[in-house]
Image (cartoon, rainbow, N blue to C red; front, side, top):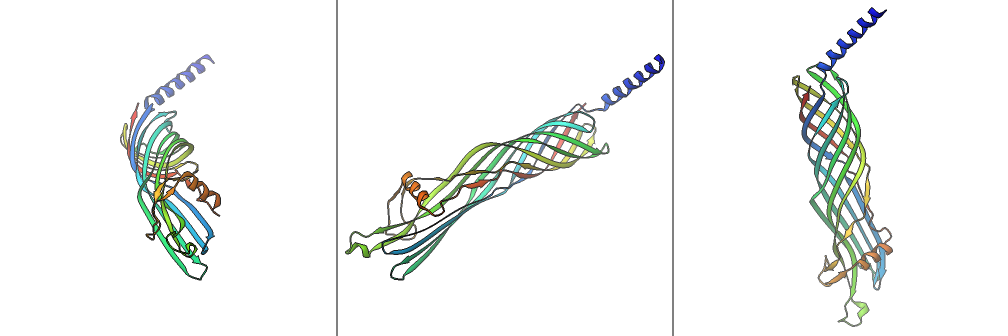
Length: 295
């Protein structure tokens, strides 16, 4: 009995010793590639009103923000729990351009049957969204010694920042006090008010990915991987830039002051005030990199 126990213990020690000699303890990785964020937000505004000789004024605006592909890069360190399973801490950074468009429409109708329509489009292709991600990933590997596939999953902490700039058109009218009778002369126009969104926030999400590693040597390999990073959406109000503005379409209305009170009046009286815009910082990443194993 004692002899069998000693032999069993010796075999166990030899197995553990053999396993520990071939088991990587840590790995260090660097990667880079492209990422495509999921930002596709929209805000809408609409209102109808009448005043004086204006029988009906219909005005509306649709503001959209859509992201484009951007660069993604980062690195990480992993600890091997078993030869095929590791726990890693990864950090990454992505910054993508955003195209913001604003489409404004106006329809004026007077009591005498006359009407006029105006449209205005604004495009800003230099806006941006960026995220720094900190992920704790469990990675499972499969395959041979030289070519290995892997899947990884884990929670991710997002540090997000978005910067958008656009324009909002607000309908106005003005009586001509130099003519008589005043009520017969009423000018109409729209003020182009700059709006912006410049926000930073954190979010807790997750990432899921898969890829493969080609080991050039037992300690150095090249990696190809794809991952999806999920972060909950967040809604923000647009910030109106107050100031003094001239009419956009005609030349009669000038130097109109847009104050915080003006913005409050617009939001309180509009049938559909300018909506918040949903920002989705989730993104898909495709990258290549290298990995170094420390035994």
